[in-house]
Image (cartoon, rainbow, N blue to C red; front, side, top):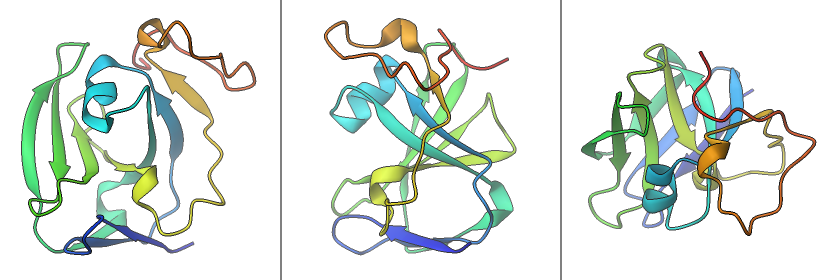
Length: 134
């Protein structure tokens, strides 16, 4: 499988050369703020399974868990692209909305459901965790 994607303005492009090890929905407050939405859909890929063309800017954050999160975005258009999390050092998390083709996505797990917006319907068919996986 090879998937491609990039930011809104096209200054940053990437290719996923490895199969994703996870497709997840994150409901944490910081992902909500960064996405400007009620959740973030993420694709976890091995660090060596992604090739990036173009420069990104990094914002260092502390997630709800207290662990560090490095959020990478396009410095030109501001599109959030990747997350590098201290809680999963072997993976990079790609913001699924930046993929060129999202038709194959099927999230398998939800994190931080304790921060899910109360008005948002539950995705009962997707296993849920109140916080990060152990």
